[in-house]
Length: 411
Ligand SMILES: [Zn+2]
Image 1 (cartoon, rainbow, N blue to C red):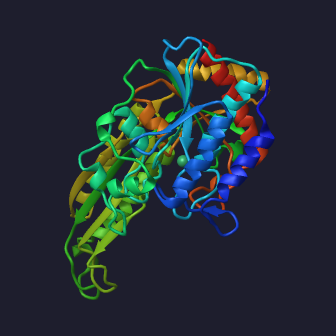
Image 2 (image 1 turned 180 degrees about the horizontal axis):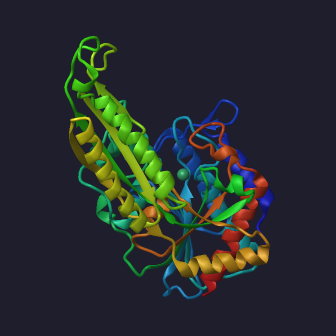
Image 3 (image 1 turned 30 degrees about the horizontal axis):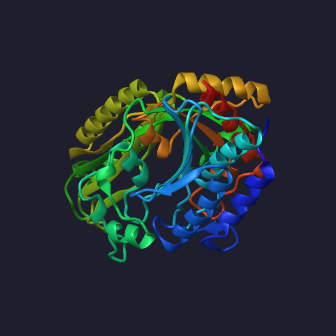
């Protein structure tokens, strides 16, 4: 009752050759020639696994095996095989090829699922080419936006043209493909893209949910003046106000956040940005995330207080713009329970951890219960050719995926 690790390894290695850059990197941009080649190869592996395949109007590659009770809500497994322009071999592919391995092993082990199973390689998860990702899965879930096919890449090619070039007739009228109730569960395995499992010395983790970010842009406005002549007590230095806020924000998250709160200021613009002028205007971004929505809301309010107090102290005007507010999406308890039981049988003792980055599962969560499995990756490095996961760890994760999928497909 186990998966074929040799075959999975071979598939991962073969796929890494398509769009290979350098020794270990991969560039397979969404809907590109390389992406198409990868889809063809993976489609072949799906068929070997006993799946009937198709490529839909969004560019998703979908394999399907009918269950013995086809009237039951289906089980979907999958991830993505497109990559960042300077990406690694495991992001997405571990989960996509792992899902195919699960179905292939079920066939070889003589297991006929009661539920119909679909394995999906979602199109354009990464979003770097058209600056908007999780495209294929949003198509399936009915979450596309206005003008989605008219978005252009850096060469001026629209998504509509790129999809045609890729070989599909874009057809957004198919969206949504699934309705609530059609799907019993969605399962995704993915490399962690963070350092928690490595730190805990565990090969595999069970995901509790995907934390949603709040993205803010804060603007502080003071008054410019000559760095040589304006006395210190008379200054309205916007950069000083920003520094004060950033320092206090970091303290706040570290001291009052939960284990899962993360807060980051990653971008700042200073005006007029000159060494001998007191900064008049500073704009910076805030990224605040937690799987615990209450904790996040509490910190968000305190953050507003900090901004207000610091602005007053440094005699600055301020403005806060909200760019994004996503809610955390929790994995289904019943799926986590099955995973934990199977994890126990495998003797993995996998910890539960949340996902900071989003995945295709984030969108699937709006139309289905979902569960996720993380696999340890070296130093948490991802979106980089140095991205690395041990084959042994991936096998353990896929083994857990297999057992969970078998249970759900028979329930
Ligand atoms: Zn990914």
